[in-house]
Length: 165
Image: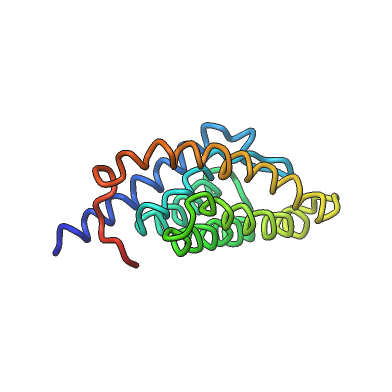
């Protein structure tokens, strides 16, 4: 059905746009070696819809572009979000509390290398894994699970796109 493709694209676009707005709205917290990117709470959305995967990926690319990120950050920071989104989607049939783990891990592992080698942040990579990881636990783990709980009641109304990627 053409309508399903349109619905999928619309969901992806809305999710991407919200990601960009939240990242830029909280820009002072969204970038750097100590960051809480509240837009990362949206990485819980692949639990509900596969449309969130491209939406989050493109949203992260755009947010990083508008945020003044360097090319290596635009690429690898966005890939970290993509990896998190894909694995959150793959865990959707498991315990719902596992959903924030992939974006927490992917960002905690990838982003510190971007900060160190791309931006020249002179802090130990394990320390930055901890600081970025804590920020991801706040945004994905705490805020993301609150969002997930709120959306569970309305999932069949809000997310109507095709359920497979």
